[in-house]
Image 1 (cartoon, rainbow, N blue to C red):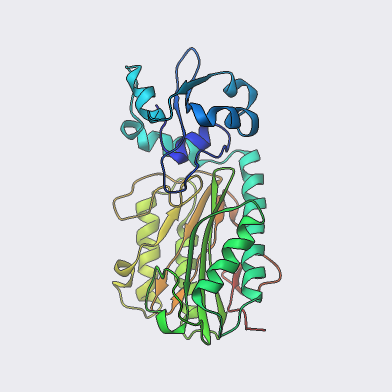
Image 2: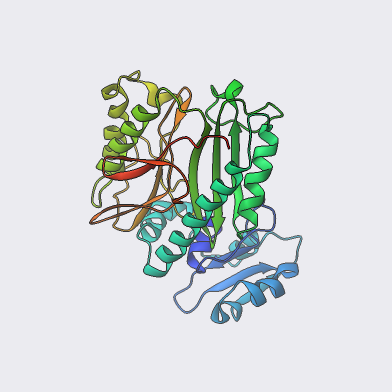
Length: 321
């Protein structure tokens, strides 16, 4: 029984599973040997059938009264294995992106990066964090990308790793973060505007340690250890990695899963990652696909300034216009 946004959207070929971004999916799927059943809230069924679902899937809809959560109705049929019981197996099943998924992801990454460039190019040191967030969210939505996360920190708030926007002005240096979803896939990226930071190059070297270790067949816990060791190697505090999560695999979830020292998932070929090493006033993050022949960065826009680092073009700060 599939009940999470990431599992349902993946299984149903990238459908939008939400109405409220903060709410549960409006569809649950019972995956049966003799045919699937899609439990859908009755007030959403017509729209999903007309605009989201493949024809074969639409023909398998079981409507549910709006007051009954689809997951509850699906479970009431009895005999289903709950998604949580096979979470690791489901992650492994969706880890290697199919060719059509990769094409969707490339388009999403490119357009998310373009949205970031367009928004950042409209900012000035006097712009408020709320104003910057509004510009970024609007640029994403204009491209059919759902803004799941929009973070902004101006100079006065760079100490915060997850800075929800405020009315504070950006000042001479600011960080913009976006996580945007389309066709179920999520693009994650971080950019800096204004002045360059003193640790920008060193944090790129830490990211390079994560990326160099991210190879098909490797355990995620080993990659995590190799990346975290990069902090000390670059002169940061050895325990800097403990002050913020480091990212990990991505795709149909923002992190699928978030990497830790205990995460023993094995990396698959054509798997998406978004590592985000950070230190006070420094952070880097892009969405990439790891293949047998190396790393492909998806969230790129040639208009954004970049520097060659460890064989990849990596973003630098965009000066205010």
